[in-house]
Image (cartoon, rainbow, N blue to C red; front, side, top):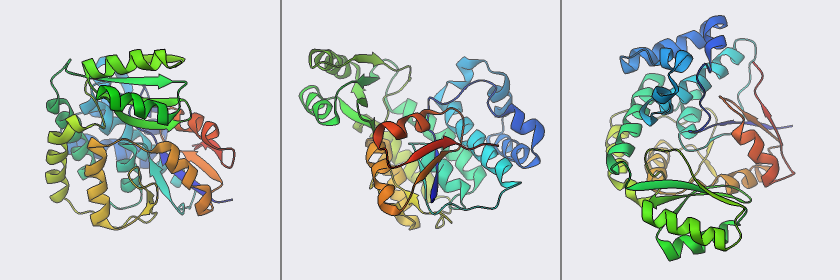
Amino acid sequence: MSSIFVFPGQGSQTVGMGRDLYDNSPAARMVFDEVDDALGQRLSDIIFDGPAEELNLTRNTQPAIMATSIAMLRAWEENNDFIPPYVAGHSLGEYTALTAYGAMNLSDTARILRLRGDAMQRAVPLGVGMVSVILGLDIDTVREICKTTGAEVANDNGPGQVVISGLTRDVERAMELARDAGAKRAMTLPLSAPVHCSLQAPAAIEIAKALDKIEIKAPRAPLISNQTCSAMSDPTEIKDSLVYQVTHGVRWRESILAMPLLGITDVIEVGPGNVLTGLTPRITSELTARKLEV
C-alpha cells in the first residue's frame, strides 16, 4: 500500500479545531505559537475560542487551517516516522503540503497566507463577486454554462460537484441555467470574495511579489499540483503554480484520478474536517480514503 497525504482548503474550519493538539502535543503547540509570532497576533485564540465570524474571515481562515493541519501532522510525527511518496492540497492546502515537507518555512507561509487572504478580498469589492456550487451536473455541462454566462469554474471537486466563481450577475445567471439543465442544487457559498477566477488577477500580482521574497526549496515529498495534476518538485515551477492557482480553477477530480497511476492506493487527509475524504470515493474506487488518526 502506498499512501499520500492530502491537505484541505477553506471550508474545513471550525471553532475549537486543534485545541486538543495544543494541549497535549508539544510539537503541535510549537506550530501554533510560531504562527502567532509570525502574524503578531494570537490567531490561536480565534481558532480555539472564536468567534466564528472572525475565524471565517479569509485572512484568518487561510493561516488557521494551515496551522491546524501542520500541527496535526507534527503531533502524529511524534510517534511515527513516515514521509509519503507524494503530497497534495486543495487550493490553500498546497501551501500546507509544501510547508509540511520543507519547501517553505512555517512563518513565511503564515504571512503569505495572511497576505493571500487580504489580496483576494482587495481584488474584488464586497458584493461584486460571488461563488456558487453546482450539484448534479458533469463538469463539461458546467463549463458550457460558464462559457455562456462569463462565470468560471473555480473547483472541479468531483463527479456532480463543481464550484463556479465570478461577477455576481454572471454566477447568478449560471445558477439559473444550471437549474434549467437539471442540477440537483445550485447554491451560493458563504465566501466574501470570488476565488480561482480571472477577477483575482490583482491578487496574483501581489502574491507573486511576496513569493519572490521568500526561499522555496524542493519539497521532501513531491506535490501533485492543482495546476498540472502531476508531480512537481522544482522550486520555480512550484512558485509559478502557486501564482497560477489564484486565477485558475482547482483540478481536484483530475488530481485524484492521477494518483492510482503513480502507484498510490491510500489517501490520508491531514487537517480539520473530512471534505477530501468524502470526495475521494466519489471520484474513483481505486483509492481508499481516511483521516489521519492522531
